Length: 309
Image 1 (tube, helix red, strand yellow):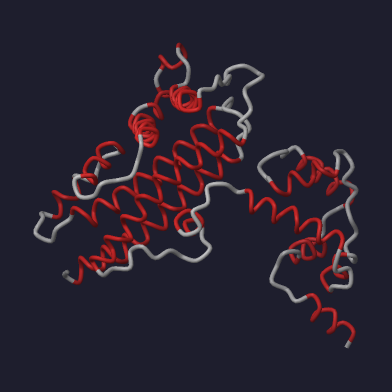
Image 2 (tube, rainbow, N blue to C red):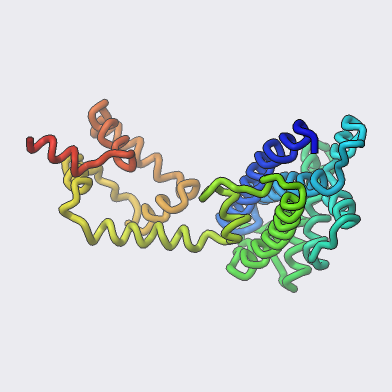
């Protein structure tokens, strides 16, 4: 393999793999935070991230399998200018059989339809006369595969439960890991390190840990909250926090505030209460420094020892 070709397939495509995993992670995370299919923008965010992430993954696999140094590089690169997941998968299958079932192929077709056409639907005047297509097609895909009736257009939409989350998560993970395994095997053959993933990155969760849910992360968040409330009161961090005068958050229940900490994009109305309290009690540079110190890389025990000295 020529040096420039090696650099391309080893480093450039290695970075692309990291990017692909990031998009797939973002897709799963956005879906995990959806409560229903009522909001078009939430369905769009999920489909957009999933389609971009999987498309980039398909193209990495295709380059490693199909590209030959004897090809006209410009002509080959033009063949990659496509958003059809179905066509890309078809080209990959000419070199390697993929263990994907009907459900996975239907999802790839959904992503193809979304990225090639339905994501632009709202720019057309005719969109006011029919349901939003990306939202509709996503719901129909899930209804068909889980034999469910999902209401999403009324003010009482069907909740996205664990069954739906598990189905969507496992579908995406199966496609992603199948393509990643192919990339890794082909990289071994080419003696490149295209398959390497940055430890504990978003892509690491997808390709190395192969996790499609965020249950572990949320359990960890809650366990940390319980531990911090109940333990380590003599720790230097707690002594520091005790020097900060607490604001009187009282408009909502304690559990509502905890829910915001775990899902900061939800219950954003709580930010209005923060603005009110800052206006009421003030927010000077000293308090800003104290608040910034929380969660920063500071050894509070050492800082406390310096004060004692």
